[in-house]
Image 1 (tube, rainbow, N blue to C red):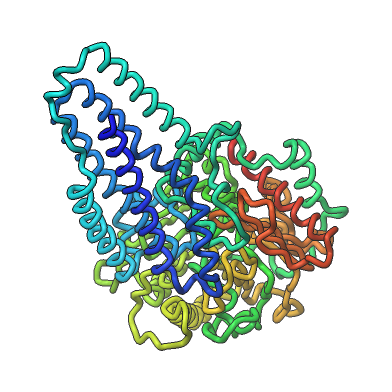
Image 2 (image 1 turned 45 degrees about the horizontal axis):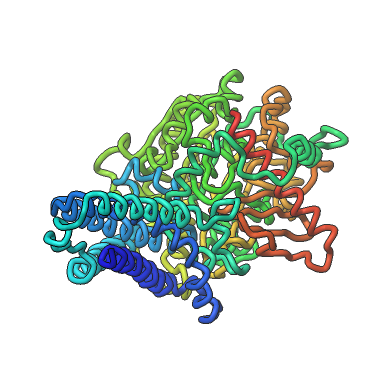
Length: 627
């Protein structure tokens, strides 16, 4: 029996050693994101990780320890071979998860989850969008450390056979009693460790949270445990809303009051009720790359055009990935952390969409992308919304130069002009840009513009030049004078300003309305009140006096109604925030304290924004769950 307990102890310590070393590797690989995080805080995360690590050990060892119990009874070496093979496999899988999360965190600032795994339904697109550096990092870490851990396991941990002679002399009754006792211990250990103890509520990821610095909280959460929990949560949350801060009726009432206006009116900026509408959905553009939006001058053409149209300097996205941002713009539908409605076809089909609203008025519609629309399940959404013309990489001439992810923005600018020339007016078309997404393999020189996110900032400059090229040609076309151009980012991105991902300023994005259909009194106008990406389509429909169609956009407000309230809700992978004109609050799920609060001197307003944000989050999820 001593041999059994010694073997089990070695296996447990082996896994704790892997968790410890992989956490150190995590900190080494995400060093640029640590900022001023102290060494002592990182050390504390190692301590606070122990409970979730113990729960993970329960998951990873329950099967081999149960097999060891079987071996104790029958003494067949084949059982030991099965145990070892299982552990080899789990070592590799664990490392793939842990090192995959490291690479994901460097790009998304988020842990590996079911939402991220959904992208692997199209693995070729995942590897196309990943930089060569991250791809090499993932494979090299996974291969090297899997080999090291397996070699160590073979030499020091591999399950050893008992000497058979004493067992043969042992009475059957005694062997059975010992076997039963061992089974009780294995089952008891598994239950207690997996649920994190004997307390009433099983362990949660928030049990590892110990401060208001998200990156060290994330490091303390075991990646395997987090992914298992995410998968179970993803399946189970359709049965129950995970955000239950209020009775549902109260949450819905709070949200309803946010959208209520004493008067339904519109300040008219359009000079025609039936303009062509051309969306340019800018992949991952941060407002801080554009001078006129309070950023730096890395997009001079966007800066110029924004000063000639209507620019919105306090606009925020609904989420943090494209499969959340695109339906937010075109369908006015919000999102929650780790959830994108277009990944569930049955839920996205009923959504309204501007192209469907305008079809009855003779509008032809199109959606254009230089990459593969499979990524993020965007293709399904676009087809469900019944765009008349849908073009992606595979539909364009093979002679057009391509990068890993698809056709670059300068080439696509020319293709967009060609397709708009072929369109039947009036039309509503959307071009989703590509070059400002990793791996940033656009042609031309990459200058050393900034210390951090230099390739990203260079990609904005490249895409900005593509926009200039597009508008030079657009102005020559017959349809130009009757066209409203809507330039907006699908979501933001980490920038050279190095904002925390829970900071609202990390998420702030550009929106520009431009064109000769805009009344001259509005050209050059700056709107510096807080609005959301969700408000764009609704506000355009109101300008077009399409009251019946606009009523479907229940999560939107009219930007040009002077009675509309000014607010925006945004979510990140592990948290959310709520913004008003006077400030914002940001919170991490599972943590009671606010991560960000720019209104600490005004408790009443801070509490009001927190209440609004949590009610919005709860109501959005409930609507998604029941849709």
